[in-house]
Length: 93
Image (cartoon, rainbow, N blue to C red):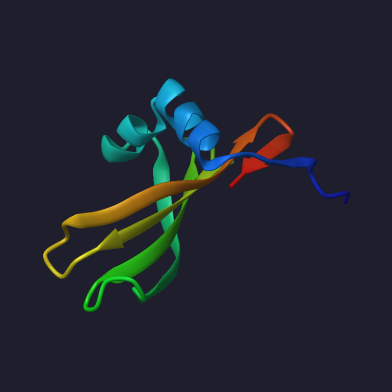
């Protein structure tokens, strides 16, 4: 199976797409299903945890990936979009 076409985009553009499609809100309120695919100690924040999370539509289609760093209390220290899949094209930063 051939790989999906991809396009490298600036961080600001990817974040604006997340804002435009209200992806952060959909992740927070559970409209998108989320799966942690990598869990490691944060290198930037001692004692914090770094997670790579894939997000899915209720149908099971993967549409986005995010990076989240939280402290021991669960407070979000850092978050950013990693990719957004739109139809058959993947935009990534």
